Image (tube, rainbow, N blue to C red; front, side, top):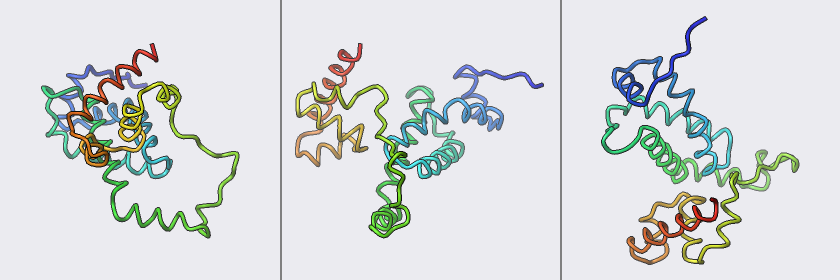
Length: 181
């Protein structure tokens, strides 16, 4: 039986920079579930989230030379890469075309077992807590975390300065943090 290898973040980064496949397997085993949860929250489709996850790990492997330890933690880099890939997928013409096909009332994919309905990801009750925020904070958090908008997109969509979006988001996050403690 093989010994289970555990890496510190620094060791893992070094091994991945050296293109060590065992370290990549470790990376997948330890981070795939968390990244898949983020993807699923945005796409709400199990098969699509698994496809995006696979594509994300291929992108992580192929672009690992772009990771800079001075700019943030490994998980944060992977999370941003995965989130951006997910948003790009949702915005792609192919996805939009497939969504239109799937939304056709005669589509086979519209047959669903009512008992198998999956609620939106909200394991810690954030949606319920949002009702306690000011309306302008609530709408920004909703757009960013539940609809996948960037701060710049929120600024353009709401017609307010980017700095205002950032300030409201920061204050909303602080309020949510207080509520959840």
